[in-house]
Amino acid sequence: MAKVVLAGFMGSGKTSVGSKLAELLDVPFFDSDAIIEKRFGKIPEIFKNRGEQFFRKVEEEVIAEILNRKTDFVLSIGGGAIVSNKTQNRIFENSIPIYLSIDIRTAFERVRNSERPLAKDFASFKKLFYERKSIYDSLPFFVDVQWKTISEIAFEIKSFLEPVMFENPHRISVSVMPVSEVKKLLPGFYITDQHVFNLYKKLFENKKGVSISSGEHSKTMQTVVNIYDKLLSLGISRGDFISYVGGGVVGDVAGFVASTLLRGVPFTALPSTLLSMTDSAIGGKNGVNLPYGKNLAGTFYFPEETFVNPMFLRTLPLEEVRNGSGEIFKYALLSENGLFELLENANQNLFKSISVKEIIAQSVSEKLSFVQKDPFDRKGVRAFLNLGHTVGHAIEKLAKFDVKHGEAVAFGIVVSAFFSKKKKLLSEGDFERIFNLYKKMGFKFPEEVFSYREIYNAILFDKKRSGGKVLWIIPVKYNRCISMNVSVEEIAKTYREVANENSCN
Ligand code: NAD
Image (cartoon, rainbow, N blue to C red; front, top):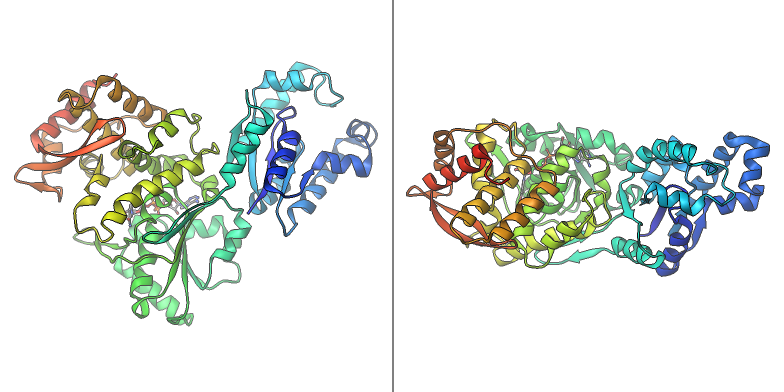
């Protein structure tokens, strides 16, 4: 699906990139400014004779007209079009919006001698640039166009739009889609949470289903029973479908409901957090918490298809993005297929850059490589996916879940890498690369530092302990790990060295 809108400041190359991209995708190209000029005459004249307000109104209408098209297109919109709230909402709903990001000096050099009414002097150009930048930054994706040719940018966007598919052990597509298209992927009865429901109301219009309250406290048997009741009262039968939209909590509950209600109803998964896109919606595990602990009741049950759509990330708060990126950091250290390098070389703002699709796809691929070897988690192969989790779980527990899972896991990875460096299993250079990526991904050391005894006890009661030792996953290269039996004393000691003395800096 390619309904693409290119936005950006004047001089960012929207028209040239748009026309090249449309050619590569073999879809029609529209330029809102060109359409307006064809209908009303030159833009400087419209500004002079009818005023900016008139121009903005016409611009809104022209953009709405293109966005209403049923078939694919590439549309470049004028630099100021995005200021209109109506236009913003329509774009978010009906297209894949991409911001062509450019540095202010380069943009001004490109347009200073043009007829553009808003590019007469640098001071007012600069003022406008920063006024609009915050709006462009709210777009879900950007591509850095500095120092790239038109062709390079167009090919980069084309590759971002291409879906990545996986088939084994269940079908997964990683594909960027406009929200309006997502509705078609929700057959049968939906399950979501209140927060997602409120953000994406249109998706659920005229559909039957249930929305649970948001957050971990909903992952209970009582919620499952309430959903059974609701879906049965709505008339669900074995021939129906369940589709869920939500993060790991909704996914775990919905998967469990689908696998048990009426002895199993087929379901589709639409993960909407970074964590669920790269972890919980992959591999067929579901479950709920019991008073005895987390995830103690559940099944393995594969969705008919998992639709991973990075468009959902637009509304995800930064702390939830960070939460999901802990697992991605983990996959990078487990993967020899280039995920580490991809993250190292990608733009600072990783999850808004158009590299995000590839980052997610590679993470999915990495998780699947373990799931495929051991789909029902009986051979211990998935133990590698615990990288960072021994110390991570201990910190989460001691901080009473005030530290996000992703932050705790990422820190746990640094602790195991530091241990490996101490034991001369990991080179100084590779440790530095790992630690630099940790910082680049925006992680910070958890503020609260626990005592040796607290960490020791927390790890000792972790389910992986055996005879005072833990099967610890440690990196021996920036992108390769081994498992090793390590005493809880040594792990707790290393934690203190890293957390207390901050020995990594
Ligand atoms: P979550 O489902 O609680 O979502 C976090 C928050 O983000 C919620 O408030 C939710 O309403 C909100 N949200 C969801 N999508 C949004 C969007 N697009 N925009 C704005 N807000 C949005 O938490 P999570 O981190 O996604 O998942 C954590 C759960 O996943 C835990 O219960 C964990 O045990 C489970 N998990 C399961 C597996 C598995 O293999 N089954 C693996 C890892 C984690």
